[in-house]
Image (cartoon, rainbow, N blue to C red):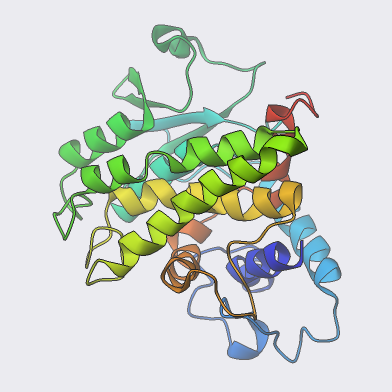
Length: 305
């Protein structure tokens, strides 16, 4: 788990500043001596601590902050937008759904105010009955809708400022079509418990990662469509986070390397940049590594939701 822990610590090193949590708010106040670079290496202040010790302490602080009342209250109650999404097992925090995280990234990138409602099996609001109980769901002016991509496109049309759909070398639709096999391949590999099938399933995941690397190398900018960030980037980044955590935990594999030569330089540079994005580290978007692992354990039949 070393690479996962290092990368995760890099994402949330801000927690020791300001309020003790302060994702986003602490940005810019961090000093080089206190931050672990995404490029690898440890600061002088961190060298006396083991990775496991640092991660354990950090995870404890973040989980404690997220359990406090009002953690998800981002504005008043009179808002047009309410996002209902999977909660963790006890309903106190958001769950590990990458598609809900995608929607939050979209709304934060647009600077929208919205109400966040983690939903567990025991506290589903009645309004979800209108959409068959599906999550994530967006409630806009009292009307619910589902399907994360359709919701994102609705938000883009309703709030066209800070556009996330500008055409580059590719359109966001083209990128999503090209990469549509990534998460299904990842899911099949992580859920598989028959070792005789692992090689072929891993090959399918590697093929998808190679495709992402090639796609990034073929565009003139830093993003999947080219120069500008689009819905395609925000859609895939949560899935890449799941891949980083789950591949290491369940299959002892790394696709994102810290402190060693990258296997896919374009993709790994992209991952580092996107994981360091302010919105990705916002407290509303946060769910920890344990949540990702638990979610996949449920999918593998090793835990109960």
